[in-house]
Length: 327
Picture 1 (tube, helix red, strand yellow):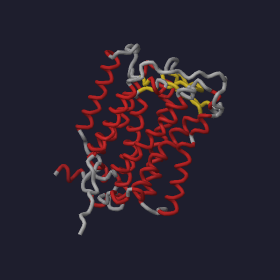
Picture 2: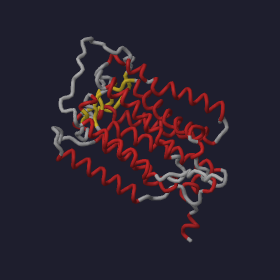
Picture 3: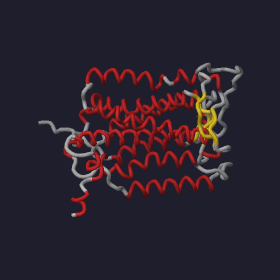
Picture 4: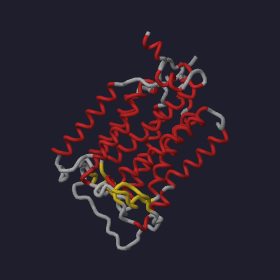
């Protein structure tokens, strides 16, 4: 009889694969010492470009949503998918309203519909109409596409590696992970040190975008990683990260940054800009890894909570039985 394949994979292996790819990319990209510059003659080179580019997320999302409804309409995945989006999308909107104008610029108005939404202006500490309405499509469709892609891989494309341990999970869902907290602190210190001591002209700023992304990934992990690590389909997550990296190269490095759909405030970046990719900051490759990890860990937490909800209260599922803990 043939041996059954190992269905689990260590998370460290996934991060090692991503790390090796990044190192290889960094070596190759560093050879570009005099990057070329795109010369644009037209005052409106990409009419509604940002608007139409949301199809990068919207079209795959619609395809997967239709498939999910037809094949798994009443599944726990389906319910966890919608609950996860109800948590992530409003959070993304709120963070964009607060931090969007601090980290980003939107100079090419012709690339959007021209509708601007209120956002916080950090210089005047007032609300101004500065965010293109497409930003909300970016975060809304983006979160939905990430979770939908993971669900599709978990249910179909890589279903043989899916975890069935949700129903057997014991104890509280929220469990403190000191390792995740120390990792976040260490990465934050490294970002601050490079910002102040690195070979770049922006030492006087603060690496706000990088620090923000670090804690987007670390904060959920501090309380939820111990419970969800064994439940995550790490192969499915790897596929999602790889696809998002490909989309980022087409979307940001090829279109958005060169044509000014959006840009970055240099003083808020850590100071590493990729010349071969039109000066794309290092934060953007980090973004796709952190957002994917956060989305998946929240999805698996919701899925686990729905399993436990049938047997106990939400509070006890999350934090355990206080009397049992005291005893």
